[in-house]
Image 1 (cartoon, one colour):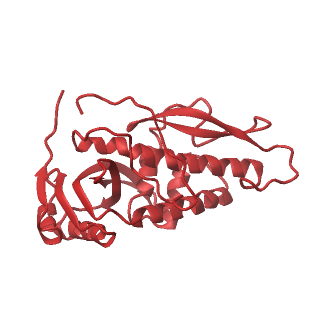
Image 2 (cartoon, helix red, strand yellow; image 1 turned 90 degrees about the vertical axis):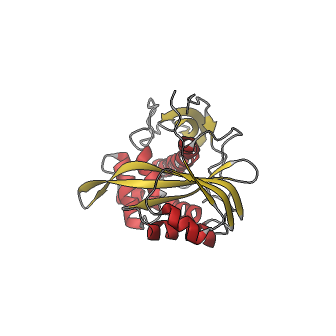
Length: 272
């Protein structure tokens, strides 16, 4: 993008019926390039961090929200905090307690930059993450030993959100869909390797951007991309007018098989 956006975006509260759906919708602005995908990922980051903060407070007090006990300490509202990531700035509501003894670990009191954990959070939303892998990812986010019970509580909250987000129904028509990759490091059995998370971002009929899916691919092929596109079809997508991407191996052939009337447009990078 020629101009870097500095808007602070605050994710909308998740309702009970759609608590698993952290929608990739931002305030109105025109799509200029596939790089805008990074802006939409702020919603995923902020929603996940908010969930983890609430779980930390549960662990600190010893009981869940709205389940008061005889302990003198209790929740005392929230305090807005602006954090920075490589996808931009956004706000989270940090829970407060009456005794002011709560020390959040995922975003510490004086911490303003979360670039150390953002890629792990994005990785958790990639298709194929098992419960065990998500638990390991949560541990890597904290960077120090925490109790098994706490890890289990965080994972139990995030897994349904991740699964519902990955499988939620989509609109039938998207005028434009962008596919771009974000590269991140993942640890498996003590070995760190680089993987690419392909972000599928759609411009819907209301003119809003929506992250449709995040797919982890070890290698690109027409078979792999056909699986990605068929997954979109199974979730309700019937027509795509334009699909924009870099020269991803096998994607053009997969588009012809899954959406034969869709035009494939190569991304044009803009330099300032």
